Length: 254
Image 1: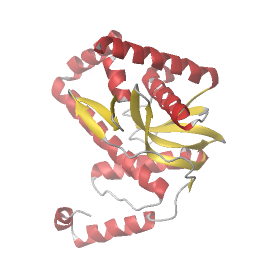
Image 2: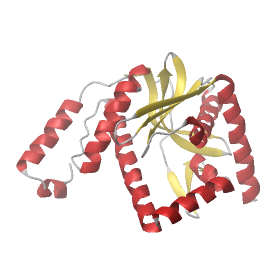
Image 3: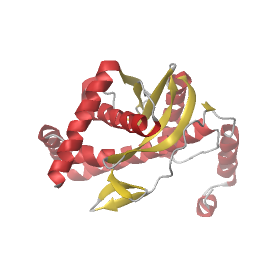
């Protein structure tokens, strides 16, 4: 724990922090199957865009490609929302969501690995409840995991990082955790599915696997849990959509 944080906390707060961490420091939540050796994560910003360093290559991230190829309709929708709530409020909403999401991801990673992590800030406490909900409702269906915060790449094309690879409901799967400010309808999260398809393709190409499912485990601050799955023909369709976005990205860049 950071020394400065300790100095700002009372003795009771410090004791509570350590008690929470101790209780969380248990055996792995899910069995770790180490059948795949994943690379370390090295990121680099090029012209303000996230890239991953894989060997001698610097590959654009999946999210960089998705943002660069976003439809004009979606861009216009975001512009209208920003105008409606105001630029300052829009930035505040995005910053809060990003902070909550980052903390939730960190807590989930520690839960899966069985290492202790506690955050006594208001954001941390909220994120911990959201992580607990995802663990109870979603991770309970994961019998084994291959890796957390897994860096994946498709040679010469793209790279990215998925939250979890493992066996979900008996099938090899790629799993992403998402925080949401409010419940989502399936048709609103097309890019999440495209992102999963990109990771599935990369994993299959590099490791010779056949990932059968892409899973989004999502929770809102009021603890509304949602789970979305793509598989079969739908997963194939999203792989095709992803390849179209990759083609568009490189056409724009040339």
